[in-house]
Image 1 (cartoon, helix red, strand yellow):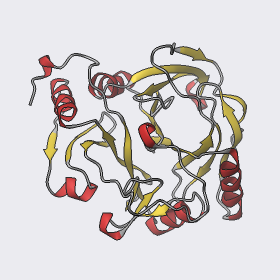
Image 2 (tube, rainbow, N blue to C red; image 1 turned 30 degrees about the horizontal axis):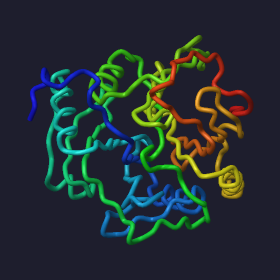
Image 3 (cartoon, helix red, strand yellow; image 1 turned 90 degrees about the vertical axis):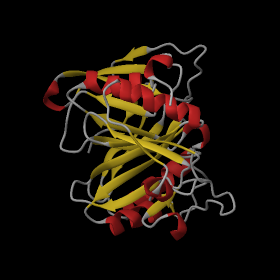
Length: 301
């Protein structure tokens, strides 16, 4: 394994959000919502129980039992073994206890290699190489979703809250190699003017966003992107027909330009469901400051 001093700062980064795991009080209700409302596909039993697909990957979301109704773990993928070793060394150099696993946990996740540690707010972070594809079992949405935008952009994005944003930056920027996309300055609850930070690791505008406010749940929401506006509209109809709460109406964001709505999944984790986001070209992108989260819509219910 390369020593931390031999890894140039910023030379290596994770490439995408590969998967997430949630811990909820009623996993079966969450799985039904995922398939019947959001249009995810159950993973094959051989790839692990209580897991969902949104593309060619064996699985993208794992649903476990837990009273927190919160994000449990996240997996980020890298290009190969050299990048995995470099990030392991960099995290260790920043003082994080990093454990390598190419045995039982790696087999459970369906990857060739895996390292893991814990981020500053206690989320288990896994960095993996060699994730399993299932092109021989094509993704078919049970709701007729025409497709989810993944590929080099990964699963989607997550928004996390912490009162110690500096510690989160050290972990995700200095450790995992995320780059700043832009910021939004806005009031949040009773916290007054607050600055949200948005980070990318591939062309997706942001794979990670950090909010300097801690709530009981560590996650504010996760996002999945679909191919078109009709997919968004049909999903919004399904959410309403299921009696689920629409937590923010249809709207368009100022920074990534995504047209989306927000809904509460069983247990309360919010999902953003959208389409049409712009992407980042590193050669020409410039960090901007926004003063509203949305151009229009996204009225909180």
